Each structure stands twice: as structure tokens, then as C-alpha cells.
Amino acid sequence: MIKVFSDKIFRFSNGERDEQGHIKSWTTKIGFCELPDWVVDTLMWKLATKEKSLRVVNFGEKDEGLVKMHEELESLRAENLALKQKQELQEIMNPEKEKAPKQRGRTKAM
Image (cartoon, rainbow, N blue to C red):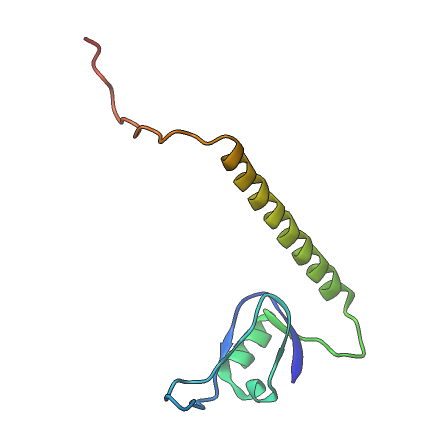
């Protein structure tokens, strides 16, 4: 397995199929993840590493830039979760009646 840091979501396949005939694939997530060794032979790997959207992380070394990016990513995920929870709480505490559709254009006064 290869440990990588990904800026995007990638799906890798080597053409293997399962019992039902579906193509087996591996998908990255944004951040740190592990991929099987065979992905280095795929075109997607070559393009992603050339673009630097996918970087190999050595187990013995720590790339400070990647560690900082991972920490920022985790912080943003936590902030996003907190905002969603706050929004849900506000919707529960202040239920709004169904809004009337907005009228476009001018309305004539009678």
C-alpha cells in the first residue's frame, strides 16, 4: 500500500472484475489515504502526480506543508460541521412559515 495526500477525489481501476462482473476500483478521499501498489501503473496516477494533486507521503518523513494542509482541512471540516449544526438548531428554534413566492416585475396598485 502507498500512503498519499490527495487534493481531489480520484478513482483508480486496473480492470479487475468482481463475481457479478462489476469493475473493482479504489477511490481516494481528500486528505491522507492509502492506495494499492498497482495504481502507479495507471494513467490516472501519472496525470495526478504530474499535476501534483496526488503526492506520495513517506512513512519515515513528515512533509510540514502536507501536515499543515491536513490540519487546515480538518479544521475546515470541523467548522463546516459546527455551522451545519448551528443552522439546524436555528431552524428548530425559529421555524418559519412557508414563504410566499416572490413576485417578479411591478405590481399595480389599485
